Image 1: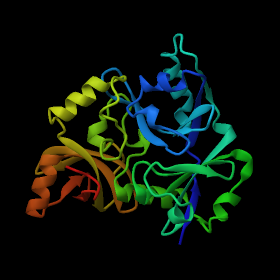
Image 2: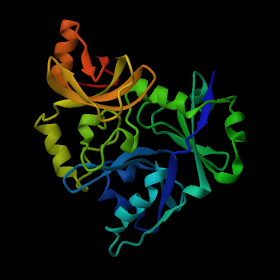
Image 3: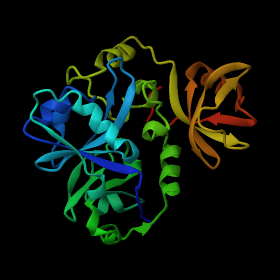
Length: 296
C-alpha cells in the first residue's frame, strides 16, 4: 500500500535573484549547478570549522531555488545565509506558510510518477515531485502550494499515514533528521552518512567548511558513524551515553518504539558484533545494525 504524510515539521526558504546559484555554490556542500527543474539535491550548510548548521533539499522552482528545511529553524537558516549576501544579487525569504511538504512512500508510488534516479524531479499538481535524493527507499517528496490540500497525493492512490510512520521508516534506514540527530555546531557530515547519502559533491570546489570535510575523508579520520540500533528495554532519551565493556561507545539520537539512531564508535560496534555482545544505554541493551547503503 502506498502512503503519504504531511511533513508538518518542514519549512521552505527561497533564494531568488540572478546570483542565486553562485551565491549558494560557495556556501553549501553539494553542487548547486547540477540542480535543475529535473533534478533536486540534498545538501548541508556548515560552520567555517566544518560543523553542522543546517541540512535541506535544494529544489529548482524556475526563478528561485527552494530549500526544504526544518520549519522551526527556517528563520535561522535565512539569517545565517544573509550574513554572506554582501553584494550578491539575491533575495532570501521564509515562505513556510505558503507551501506544504509531503512524503509519499510504498511499493508503487515511484513508478506512478515515473521517477527513476534519486533526485530526479518533475512538475506535479502545480508543484514539484522528486525522488528522495538520499535514498530511493524513502520514496518521493512533494512540494505543493498550501491551498491545494492533499488531493494530489490521494490522486496517486496513496492513503494518509502519520509522522510516526515516516520517522519509523527513516530510523530503520539509518537517516538523520536535521538537528534532532545532528547536534548543531558539533556534528560532522562524514560521521552521519552524508557521503553515501549524496549530500556532498567532492568536485565542486570551495564552500564553507569544505576544508575540514575533505581532510576528514582523505585522511581516514572517521571513527564514529550514525546507525540504527535495536533497543531491548526502555527507549533511551536522545543524548544518553552508550557504553561497551565499561567504556564510552557513543550517544543516542532520535528513536521510536524498539528502534533508534545512535552515533557509535566503529571499534566498539565491530567488537560487539564479532563477540555477539550488546551495547548498553542506561537500563537498555542495544544491537547495532549497519545500513545496507553504508560503506563503513
